[in-house]
Length: 264
Image (cartoon, rainbow, N blue to C red):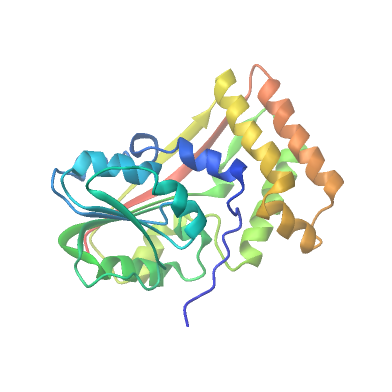
């Protein structure tokens, strides 16, 4: 039986707006120097497919497949029309492809939500061709840092970590990627780190708007309330804290991601 992992964010529009912002340049820059025209690519956990679409343009005419287990989000991704790009449903633990099917197998912000990430990495390696690349990038939630400080945002981070770990997942995935790759049996691994930073007025407004809405309306909020870990009033206070942070002229928010290029 495959693990029934919980995607804590869900697919509320406040979540998908953040996913739609992602591009190959801002979310997979560590992989781009490895790409060549004609390569085949599998993008696992592709969501609405913005990174996938960028990858397809970069390796055309090579075949690119975006895979996600959620049919609803794939319906949005499938609205993209590129001759070398298609989308399909599937599970990262049992990818619906033969051994050695792709030159590149990529996953962005996926392993942090899994209960058995080593198994997922092993399966990604199975469908990667000899001489190919398994590429993974995940945030390390505890490296998120912001200014000005606000105890309400401290509480948001505490709550996020609690909920993710209650689901059997590991939100501090970035620092563990190398260990998970070793656990999956890989030894040829290139390691790097990347950052996201939001500090301009527009960036602050966008990032804060996403989370101010997400903490009161998404699956994150539903689980936190259902588990009795918070109250509606506390969540509203966290949402207000994001607004206060965004409005501050000195507002700054950043985070670290772990990145691996694995030769399976």
